[in-house]
Image 1 (cartoon, rainbow, N blue to C red):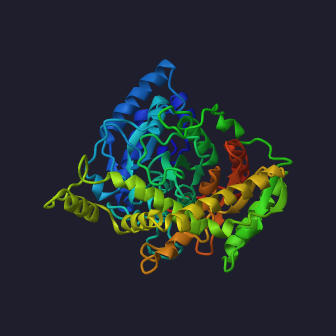
Image 2: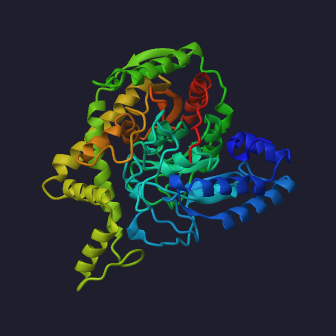
Image 3: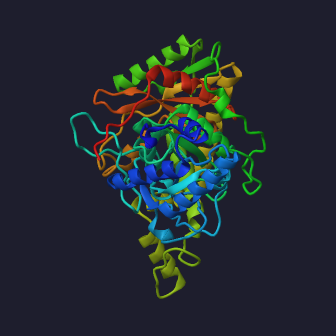
Amino acid sequence: MTDLTSLTIAEAREGLASKSFTARELTDAHLAAIEAARVLNAYVLETPDRAREMAMAADVKIARGDGGPLAGIPLGIKDLFATRDIRTTACSKILGNFIPPYESTVTSQLWRDGAVLLGKLNNDEFAMGSSNETSCFGPVTNPWRREGSNTTLVPGGSSGGSASAVAALLCMGATATDTGGSIRQPAAFTATVGIKPTYGRCSRWGIVAFASSLDQAGPIARTTRDAAILMRSMAGHDPKDTTSVDIAVPDYEAAIGKSVKSMKIGIPREYRLDGMPAEIEKLWSEGAQWLKAAGAELVEVSLPHTKYALPAYYIVAPAEASSNLARYDGVRYGLRDPGKNIIEMYENTRADGFGDEVRRRVLIGTYVLSAGYYDAYYLRAQKVRTLIKKDFEDCFAKGVNAILTPATPSAAFGIGEKGGADPVEMYLNDIFTVTVNMAGLPGIAVPAGKDTQGLPLGLQLIGRPFDEETLFSLGEVIEQAAGRFTAPKWW
């Protein structure tokens, strides 16, 4: 029998239905893999007892013939999603051992459909980071290594634990969140598939907030089909989230394998950056040719305000973070550092509880929202955001179905290599991804090749609002042309 951890969700679903193995056996195989891979630090909390209990319940339902679409499928959950009676920390010291008495909408829908919880996955503290080095539980290690090197690499961030666990076969899929690229960049760094849905497609209720107008939940999986299967369970209207959109959730899996003939694919000239590595340029060109060979039409498009996206994003996101993180004050839950009065208690708690990157962003956000600076920074950034959104609208109005770009400006880098002296160096990793969040659009990252050192590289497809189906169809074309990539096991 094939090693159960190497199956895709689609394959596992068939195996469970045909009684080739049980959900309990599938879960036990993943629990053993997690135990053997703790060096990767992908999980911050393992839940073996809960996993076995859920797997056995799935087996009973499968035997009765009423298993849900994810019955018995073992998943990892990013530690930003509230899980009832299971510790949820956002990988921050300030939340301490917070155990929520409620379940996030997205995870409750996964459990409704029969999925199994393996544990909580590591992420950058409050999702603030592009490398998963800011977590209070320490950095996550990418299962990929440069050829002939033992250097430990970052898996990308903030959903680094999710991407690393999926790539290392420690779960069949994972939940993730994306505020400026936190699903797509780690997916590109680990040869996994990650989709950031349209803003409002997945409920944000029960997910620890970073920047509320930008945050969106989505899946990371091993294949485009698996991502589509997970997305169908995760998406849907939620009256508890006022930004959740009440439109029907399509069968995303049905889009896999659909013809892309006559689709117009935009190639934005502004994404050709000065000093962009030749291998990224080559991959981008190859991806375009694969889509053309499948019948799509390539057209050059212009997104003139792209160059302002990163600076505008790093005003809007910290501003919203500073507001959202004001609730962590040591009064109601989480860490409390005493002081001689309440003000000193606030100060001590927040100084001790937040890491350097979170403190940096809270300070930036508070500054740009303060009297005298609000108009100069925040208001102007919001105006730029409107222009970025209009750029995309103009493209789509000309009949463009999707836009193809690189996912990242480079392959994965070493732990500790970037951002130490200059945080902006780290922020530049988001250069191809932040526009999608600023415009509220869907974007998918698909593995497309390797660099000269054998590390995976991804391509990004950006779609029209609520047209994730087109992205899945196009993503499948790239996946079929590029082939699948698996990290060589060294741990």
